[in-house]
Length: 548
Image (cartoon, rainbow, N blue to C red; front, side, top):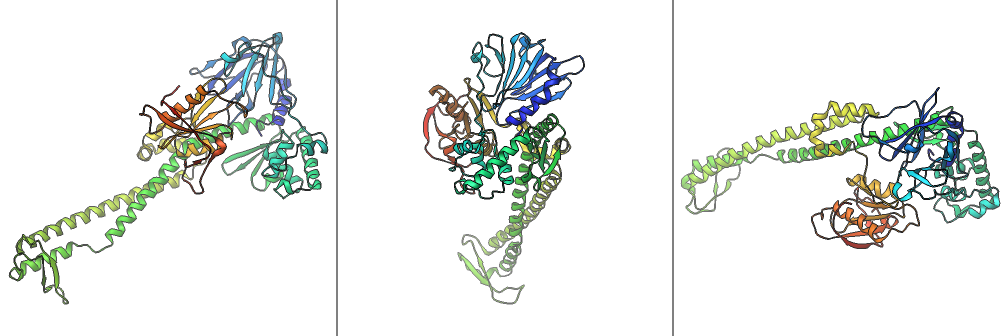
């Protein structure tokens, strides 16, 4: 809910008196897709930090002023030293306006693929933009589009969609500004357990409407909360949410400003934590399973009786009775001088004498004993490797916080390098490779099987275009569209497909067939391995593998 309209409205209300009267002291980016605007005042300095890229679009405030000395891009210099005369949010839209002296305005659009920050002059023309500045310069800025919200039950009924997959989804279509978490709270407060919206009678729908209206009113007087499960924060709400209280730890805040700032910082730290933690966990788990399985197979083989003793016995028997062995015989039966019972049947090399066959078996006995000794050593070493990986994994699973995983990786760096290899170079990088194709189009590419799954099934919108080199292993690639109704031109599609071909095993080919399908037509088979999918309604284009 950090980017919900109601949260942004509450933030603007809390910030208004602090920021009006300040001057714009700086604007810069020191993190990809994140803009920082600094506000200066004789008594206090503030910074607004906003991320303008899905999947985590956020806006929060910090006190004071700080800026890195390197790898920083200074932006929006035309706004510097202009006084803030007002700050407001559009009516039922996630557009925030910071009005400056001289009729200039910072316009923050905090939604979807078109999320952006614009500097607009007194002539209502875009002077500069955080994203796509070349395309938007001198254009008129987008106007707010108030979301429809039902004022009475009749309007609610008109917007109710009984064909939605669940009741919370139907609520999100009726109360346009509600997300699914709010929808679940409305459903809980209304006491509606039926999750099939087509089966809800008018009385149930009226209860949902009344609960939704009551929650909207409660949002006007926030008492924000954070809800966490274990080490991770999961939900930010503007008031206590009853359906979350029994399953999560609740933390209450006195201001929305403090709650949002805490939530965003923790989410960013959590994402950093996952990037450091999950590849190490997977590498150690895979290593332990590999070595443990190998050790168990070795032990199973070693549990069988060694053949060295039999070979040596055959050698002794042949040396004791060489005259009982016929020339050119392929086998011989000799009394066992060492054990009572049936005679021993000994295979022979017909080209060798009895003595030569005996020497052959003595040699095999020596080699078998050496092989067994070496196998026992390998078993011990393999079991030690399995135990070492498990011990590291046990220690890792005690780690809960970002500083702890950093310390863990530093302390065990020498041991971890054996399991991570070259993969460690990418552990601390942001997920997905990303390419800007202009016009609001971006291409995201998974780095491994786990990221492929996350990209395709968690971060891609259903209308985004999914791509993969056909018939060869490769990365999942998504052409992210600015909006549901966007139609990329042929050149944009082919540029994205070329990226998909480049990040595949067919990179060295002159031309590569690349599958293209809307994300909604990409499915994960039941029980499928990470990255495994099947595709319906695909098109295929032939492209040269290359990066833009």
